[in-house]
Length: 452
Ligand SMILES: [Mg+2]
Image (cartoon, rainbow, N blue to C red; front, side, top):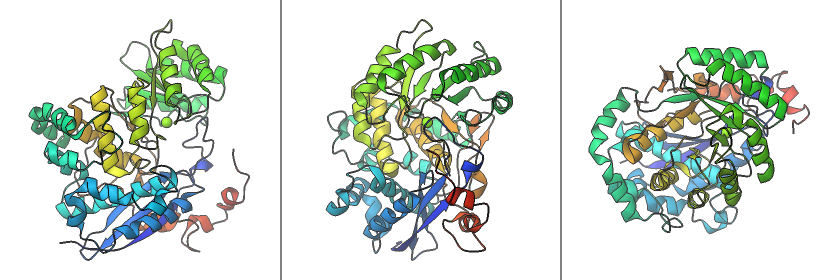
């Protein structure tokens, strides 16, 4: 029996804006950050969960974590995990906190950190990685993790159970594949940040090709002619006929008509999809873009979104509106593992592959579990997962790619526990003499002009 005795939050920020890592058409200079929830217990185990942000405002998410986490303090872990769907509903049902959502925005980012910390704790007490807990569940147990309110018009618990049963027969073989790190092919965005020079782009693309990657993603949307130049460089590096797949990401910069005309101009480079062409809330807009780009002279350009989709309801409607070619759930923007499981089921029901959002600190550590669950338990079909090779050295069990596949995590937990010394070294505002944010160099970010 493990009892939850308390929690702490940590505001950890990496100064990635200094070298433009993560730069795109909307986010010119982000400082990759983690709002942590660390759940402490009367046992040797603690649970680590985090939410990803890109700097300013991370303290607001930490404040929201401090309001939600007390809801689990004093409880037995068993009591929370026995009926997970009910626990999740409980955590979104404080009516006063619900008012500042509901189930979206800062309060939901904070919920993701708390829920994921509980999964991490649970996994550590069971001695399993999170993906393996789910892989060992029966379809009924899987479905019991989910709060079906608001999605039964698209999928019912009974339907979900029968979908899961359909792919149960090959599950044990897929678990073996996962254990051999052959479950989740990786793609890379490391080359494609908008702020990188053309020379750097070419060098990084050539390197990625050599490393065995088959999927490549570039940021677009700041300047059309510049996009054409960069996509030409990319196609020269990866070719058109070598089985390499190009993807582009606009990070919400366009209106719906702009997205359509801009992408008609870029269609000659044959991208698989345009990611985040417009506002993440615009369900019918995404549907209109997908329809308009379905028949370009160069073939179809698909539509992908999800990293800023606030909850399962938006995903449900995107799927119902036939707006998506690819669905990109985020591990912590929605309310943690449980809500992601609901989204995986919705995607399976509508036959849309998932390619989780992983461009951020800690995200590949999380999403490697989610993509493994999708393959082993939900679809039985391999997809791809973004891998960004930044900041992994700060994690106790960093994610890793080998020969084009994610190395499946085998250590107990949800893989986002950060090294204590990294937390101290990058805590914001941090302690004098310990944190980088107290250094002279940090003043250029703290007091410098805001990049808008
Ligand atoms: Mg993106």
